Length: 127
Image (cartoon, rainbow, N blue to C red; front, side):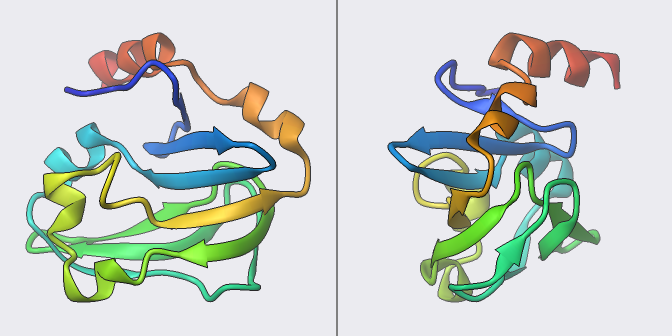
């Protein structure tokens, strides 16, 4: 399981990467491996507001459909359009090619409430 140290993680298996004033969000390597082959990704529109711990989209695999939960609140400023044509990126490259949205956080302090890679790995082991 790949859990990059520089990222933060939510209990719902999303990762967060701080990039200046913005935050890039995707799902973890653990999440994509549990879901199986991803066949469809539904994401919000640029300009939409997302709320921490509320759904912002979904991923569909051959096994199931799972909601994506916003790890922090903010305004969507970019959406990874490549995932419409290539949902398999989520399985192939969950931290690089398969980022999902970029937001401008309404409260950057929310990031501090997320888990470190070590804390996330511990949580996953307990499941």
